[in-house]
Image 1: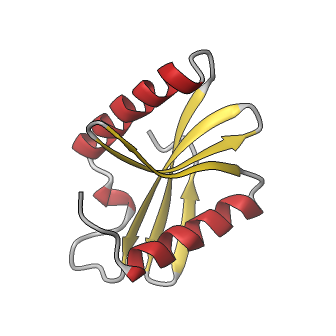
Image 2: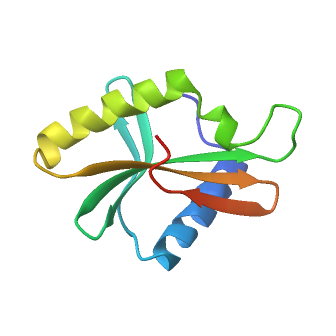
Length: 112
């Protein structure tokens, strides 16, 4: 797994602050599981929320939200199911994306 850059850490810190401001409680950061990593795991009330943080500083590779493609969504669903099966087998699950495009941060609830 590639090591996170300072830019990546700053983006995740920005995303975490946004989520906390919206009332989320962060319960896991960079949770590594066989097959990959989940950026943030949160509680939004009783809902267990798996959050993908994506940052794009320019538009040459598209938007941050567009970078969460079908392959990425499939992998995240699989990782989340593995995590939930062990930690919270009866919890309701949701997938959110925090898209950081330049200086703009947007929370996409129930993104997929």
